[in-house]
Image 1: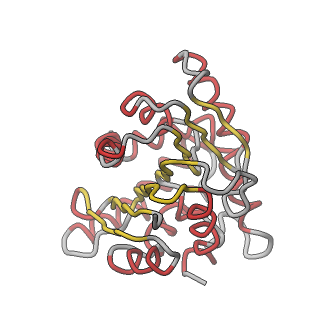
Image 2: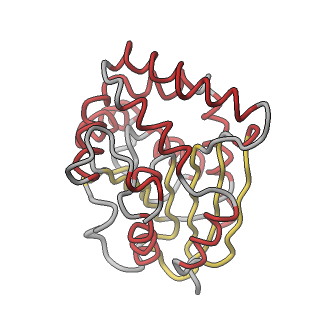
Length: 246
């Protein structure tokens, strides 16, 4: 078990998947406001960089895992213009917000959403040219199981892109990040979302999630090849790219 897998939003007892679903259902109405506001909008730059890494491969069928409110799915569809893009998530509350955005954008013929457990997908083997996960993989109750499922549904030669928040390791960003994540984020999260525990849980998982070389090795052990990573903005976010063996 990885350290972040033991961290739960609300209580030590109970399944993490159920608590994560409950948490995101509760914060869904204010999630976008907090998500972009707390990052000062820098997350948009990180998202675009992640999507650009797929441009050379021209994926036609894309799966966005832990799609949340659909921002990453929408941006991916606009930048890559795939034939189809499916977003999956545990939280029906988040998916409800995502569906409204897609309807407003007129992209229902390209983007669809489905409630799925990312650790036990009902999707067929070798179904997608590319798979993306933006700021959701650290919430998995079983990282290895999730990666195995991603490998299964990707076609041979398909590409994996993960972009995740990470905790800086060097002075002074490490100390500044601690103040931001342990004081400012819970305070603002409580005021806007009314769920203080959620915005204590989220930075705790950022600090605990394996990053850099360790995550690179985990991806290799899961069966991915051509694994690489790139850190953004003093290590606040990290992009991982990999492929399913042909």
